[in-house]
Image (cartoon, rainbow, N blue to C red):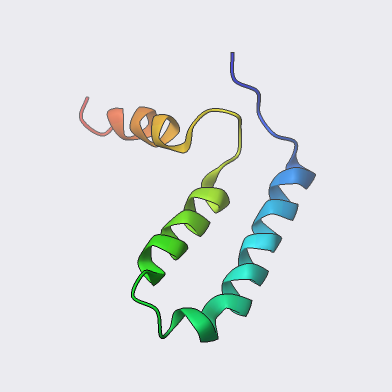
Length: 66
């Protein structure tokens, strides 16, 4: 049902996240919504398949309670 992204796409995505985060840092230091921006970057960083990030994290955390 969900497809896993190939490794080069994941590496390219994470490289882009690091570059965007570093380039935006001087501007985001003075903005009040920086947490929302970096939260979005974290979601992009975490995405390794077409499955929604929240669903993947919920399934991974489910094993902690059983």
